[in-house]
Image (cartoon, rainbow, N blue to C red):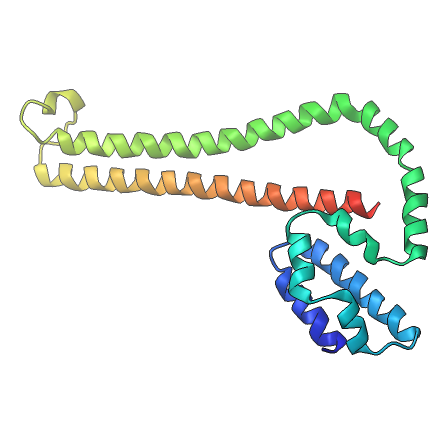
Length: 198
């Protein structure tokens, strides 16, 4: 397998990771090819040393990025060690900014929860409101709803419309929650990747 095929397959197998992480990983393996070829190795020999792209991708997809650091050259490892020494200013900065960042983080989470709650509660309200309009058509239940609409066809369509609108809102609330979860997961992977790279 040549270099281009290897890197294309690696990129394909890593497609579930954020693009930033995939680009970094593919760049690292491209550098490995360049170093190996500079040492006189063929592309086929380098691909055998690296292993199959799907096996490589499986390790990254498990989320344990630290295992693959051994792929880097000694020079790159020295650079990593130098960068790790400069982490103290980041820790001090984090401690000093904590009184600002932590409340802002909680405010952001409250905002996200507020949006979800507004969508979900609206959906539930419309859903049960629509059901109550439909139930009001039955004898003895009409006085519970208190609608001024007396035409039964109007009540049916109003009840169905409100129930369907409620279902749509509940679905949108679920999709919003799924979007927030997926974005949070990708953000966590990117942060973890950046931390391992340092």
